[in-house]
Image 1 (tube, rainbow, N blue to C red):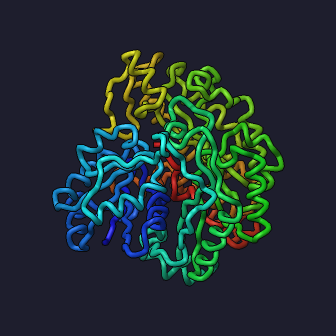
Image 2 (image 1 turned 90 degrees about the vertical axis):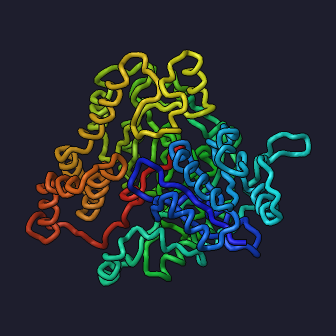
Image 3 (image 1 turned 135 degrees about the vertical axis):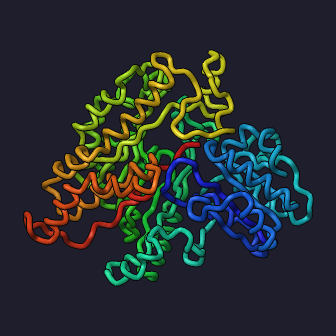
Length: 516
């Protein structure tokens, strides 16, 4: 049987990082079946095109995974494919919590982690006997979380990754001529563990993966990195890693052990990961992050207001420590993607500017601004539902990026929207980008160029700039800084060792992994 695994485009960013679940299920599929992958971020296709593809390629089963913000598109695709007579199974955090809703659009739902149930689903599909619900439960009916100790080997050396190359085809010949291994560039997701004990009010992770952390063996992770590194070298290309663990350093002792093993094996690849600020107090951990290839760390700061953090059960974040944490990273040439949420209960008009006043005192990084979003089955959703504050109880059915789904306590919905726009506009203004470059005057030119490019494109990638002339206008607005860097690169300004280009950081193209 031919199986298609499909992930819809994410509805917000123009970036692309492939989703691990597709590669994982592909590896767990019995060998007698052929698995094809389409990720909507890499291969945009509407419902009609996907239905046609399914018919033309003689697909016998379609698996669709979708986060909450993608689920409306996922449902439309599922409806179109089922109309061709091909069965559809859906999975992920959203459909796990709203299985009845999902079953209106698909033949079967895989609840929770599908590592154990996927082979059963495939076998039932072959027999034409799909059940509506597949759940990983033990003999007593209790949910069973899969161990990661016997993690499947993902054959990265054999998988067709053509759709995931982030260098445009038109630029490939030129990049190859430049040498330095830039014939291709891919960001590959890797997980080293699952679960999170923190239970933040707005997050789906603890509910889906549980509060007990399960880890892969160090050897398994190191071998996967070595396989990816060998592929990059064989292809004359670049591969960067996004560790998709929801908190990569949740067990600091274990993380140090893993990073030491990566270094000892020579398995370093440039990588980015999500790590809580409170765990980055450890100097040795930060040393190992840098030595093992860590380039950017995504930190969910959420707010500079301790009251807000306590309200959403994230009081372990200490805003007074943010500056020291970021400086500690910057000293090792590791910079941060810092995430902030507006529309929290203690936010008032001016929250964005108050946040930026802090951000401007920190080493240059990539701040992200979003709105508090009540995702299904989270404690936040339940609290707002009881209080009668949900304005769009099923906001995912008509997804609108950067739009509130409930009424904030101390500002209007429109004022909250204005705060997000203010944050993006002022954090990534030409003046802010120029200031960031100037703040790195003691760094090599190549490093400053990389940070500037990251900031230049990140706003347009993560907070899309629409219209044909938006990008040329944005480049023109930053022409002074561009000219300054180019002039220096050609030796007309201060002589600086440009050296080999620092590897393009993953976040220059990929936004952080969303929780749901």
